[in-house]
Length: 621
Image 1 (spheres, helix red, strand yellow):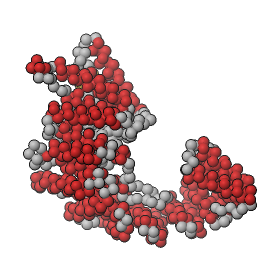
Image 2 (cartoon, rainbow, N blue to C red):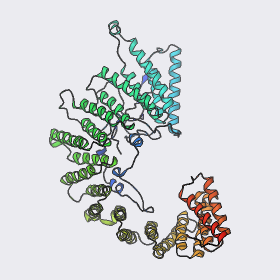
Image 3 (cartoon, rainbow, N blue to C red):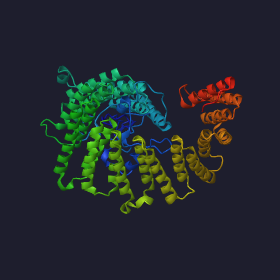
Image 4 (tube, one colour):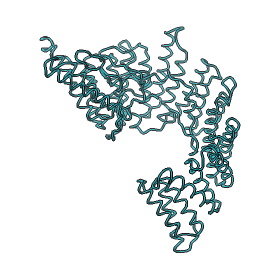
């Protein structure tokens, strides 16, 4: 999973301080694994989108729906979910890096959680690491006070930085900020102390490690939700980096990206684009003719920003330029070039376009990706099935249902081909694809088409897994759910009863899965005006849920509410009122809001039962 802009959070082994022994310092710019280096087979599953609530639901990157703050987010609970945990890159901020922080998401954007500080969740392992660095800092300060090392030294700066970086990994931007600030002052003091008289006279020079600390302070401020402060710090770091390293240094590009990503987070897309244009210029080099993976990344990131700013033509130009740079790179490598790099780049671009709802562009790019991939791996490779399902999803997002169905069917044909092991080997992929076909038919309001797809899943599972199998039961429940939604209550009951037999055989009568099914069956019996049967199912579900989950669990409240509905249907309105009140009390204990569906239904049941009790009116369920 990759981000459009890159500025990676602190995470990776640090430079420890052990007397005179110094290892690498922690780094807030960790390199990100190139998106196209990862296996593609699993993404076949990730493209399957389940809109039927009871179906397994998983989404591709192209389908991910995020708010802008989430899009710009760089860190979640202190974990860099976009990076490679095995990467320990840090090094000297002055070192050249051809690909500063990875490809397509990798060279310098913000680490933040949300616009406001979040409740900290402490990872015991991370706390242990923090304690280690705090102890190391205490030891180095003690040695400094005893004269073993200078009062102003990089060792002290390293120790402070490591503590700050660990706090940042723990999503504690407030504490991280103070340690980064102190480290900055130490590093700059070390540099100042080493200046010649001539250098002092000319105004001195900036410590590259101090600049890195300012950039890290920006990460910490952003993680704390202090966006204005973060922007000021990023701009300061960028300006100092320009003075120290010049226009065409990779860390200058990283600094532009820091500023641009935060502008994007703030919805200032024009300002963000200006920063990413500057980043592109860095990677193009002084002569403007440089070609590198970092330049490919920069063009993709700029395309993402322009797309978010609704400048679609300009965005498409940047994506096309990224492809052209990649083709030039491949040409330069000659026979050593990996031909799959181009389709992998197109795949990534299409995912970004889908994520930011650049729907028409996503369709175009997935088509290009399929053509490019087929030219490399052939028509029946499993990765083509992945691409077809991604194109199907892009068509669906444009409400082009028939074209989406065609692509899902193409994907199924590839997966079921004997060359790839057939349906038996790839059952889960086939089942998931038929689930998506059901969803597409729901989108085009073709209930029969959706039913046919769900019934195909049941038939496949019975054939390949057998009738006495939990997944077979789950597919029966999914089919029953859809029939119930269509008010085909008798047919739904048949599917539920088959699943009930399987669950009882495999899981026993006190299974929560079985209790959930009994709630569904109770609802169907209510619709069929068979209140006594509904009552039996609700009571069985209540017994199991109460025993397993405790008397005040929300699921227990749901079962109690069901019993109230059955009592009302039987005309016992007094008991129905008591049951509805009991369910509401349980929901309130669990903090369910007034507009929660369970709470709203219970109150509706209460009002209806109360009205019927007072006026003898017919209860409407």
